[in-house]
Amino acid sequence: MPFCSCFGPSKAERREADRREAEEARARAAEAAQKRQEQFDKSAAGRAARAQIAATKKSSEPSKGEPVLKWQMG
Image (cartoon, rainbow, N blue to C red; front, side, top):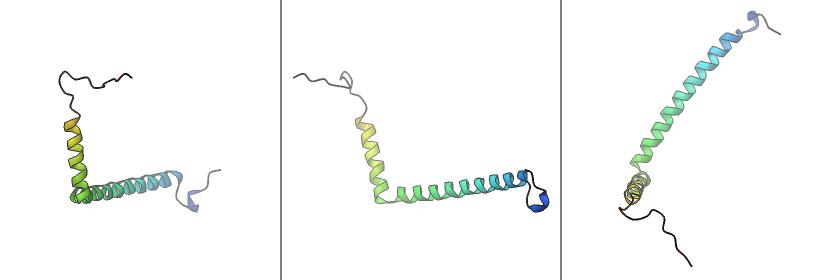
């Protein structure tokens, strides 16, 4: 049952306002996430995690001539 726009904002106006609010909330969330990531990168845990990832990437490179999976019998 449609209401007259004199009782408040129209449906289109409400949708536009909701869209703008959602867009602003996403922007604030992205800024907060970026700030948390920068703080983590500066922390000792962040540096350790980055070093561990680098070591994992380096060790996961397959050796030439060696199978990736080694099967063992018995």
